[in-house]
Length: 386
Image (cartoon, rainbow, N blue to C red; front, side, top):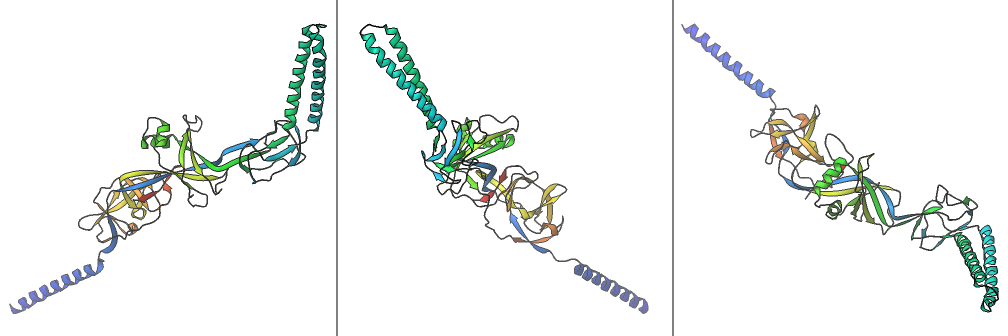
């Protein structure tokens, strides 16, 4: 009996010891929950910048063309030179025209002499008045011919019609030019005010029409805010501009509608013929924004980890409306008050427990981003916190 009792006690002791070791091993095998930065979803205001590639032109781009045929005798300006209205640009050789003008002037003198000769004869009624009127008609015809030839001689001196900057000079001194040449003598661009031309496709045009109030396109333009210009070096142009015109009809071939934004150019930083990016700010009220680092892609779907009350995480599919350099604006999938993991999504899986830690707030400058998260379009957006 005593031996049986001792054997049972030993067995129980072995069982307890074995269970304790298993629990200890299990505790050692399961790592403790790791800390992850989290953020509570709250709606906030944002400004989205829609971006459009634009071609820059001076407010006046005047092609300089000759009105008469002739050889270029003298070029008085150089490419890139600033000129004033009325400044001499070109001198064409007009020797033949000058000779024609001299001949036409001689005809005027001869016709005048004839009129002067006939007038006293008519006064004395020696000849009829018909002859005098005929001579006067010939005089008027000669004067008209002389004026036309003299004007052509004057066209050989070409001056600038506007203030501006000289473009390229494709013809050199001695070149024969005429009004039908394919290329102009040069182009004078008034760049004190610059015009940025850009286009919206049908989808963007619909969004624009819905965003801004007004019964007509012109009224909508008046309700748009000031726009900015991004230069090719990535910097923002210091002068703000305004949307001024929009084409009333879409291009049937491209399906786009052309806009024009005007910008002052007092320091001549902008150049006619160059490219830039017009940025139109659009205010969004009460949107949900999440950091890009919090979102991961799985089988073409964008997902994010949401933290439950027991500090376990679960993945959730979201729909991104627009994107910035640091944030996504989420249109579907998240609600205000939910807690999300903002970093380390690649280390998580559904049901995993974490130690939530408040994420550090980052104030970063807004940068350009795409209008959609899945499909990139021509319009880019930027989101900044207010």
